[in-house]
Length: 155
Image (cartoon, rainbow, N blue to C red):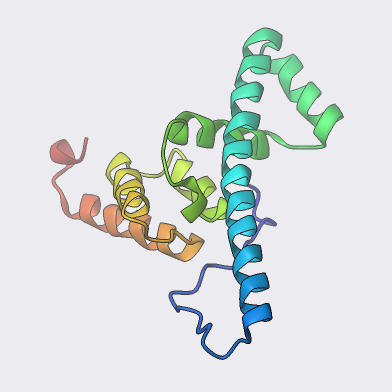
């Protein structure tokens, strides 16, 4: 997405609930579950938006589509492309609630090697949280690996 979108990376820490009283503990855990549901819905909503944009783009065509996204949402091409990329790369992926929205955008970018995306998906399916920072690190790892390969092997 555009560079003005930033979501704080998820910490690698575990929250200590042992200091909370029973009432507070119940409330906080309930809110945690509800927020996780909203996060999952957010990821699914990003995919849904991208899928709908792709359909409209096919119907309107390139020139009209750009005018439409600007008029209706005040988005530039890169914002719309970010939604479309997430829809193309993550539709059908399980455990999307462990991905920060910014991580989805980062990993769906065309500059992301497929192996990096697959590693992030595998980590998410194992229950690991994929923050923006984690996504960037995974992406960079594959970029460095590919830079070391001979040109014909990297393709």
